[in-house]
Length: 199
Image (tube, rainbow, N blue to C red; front, side):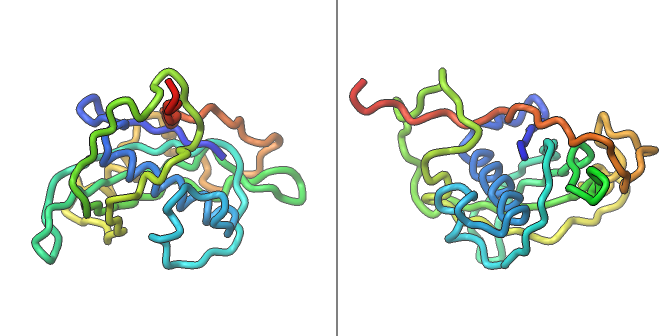
């Protein structure tokens, strides 16, 4: 399973806040798919409370960032709220006859908060070389919490996810037998590697 992120031009997928959000959603999907914390990213085990049964999928999940907005939590702390739409139409699970697509779109919301002052990461990363996963603890210095969906009418994030995601054909069956396994596309944007301390 790979993940392809899409965001509006004003949202930087490489910002500290979006790195935390990306790492959380990717780790959560890996955990749901395998029920194995060893395939999640460093630090994720501290955050997860739910248990999971293995729900194998292959293919590529497209994750659309709907918005990231500053807010305050119920304790008055500054937080960022991230709304995403997960597009599973390019994924499938194995069946007795081949492959079957069983998932379509899912809206998720996440609240993230700094618990430590920002750190200077100048020279820490090698932006010329990327991996499909982070090798460092992206969650260090952050608190992450899933939150309930927002319902505000036709323009709320759930409606946008269900009906307004570009490239999703609403006539495509949500449950469909496939002859071949879905294509596993490259990760995007991926994760920079840690720079060599000796360089």
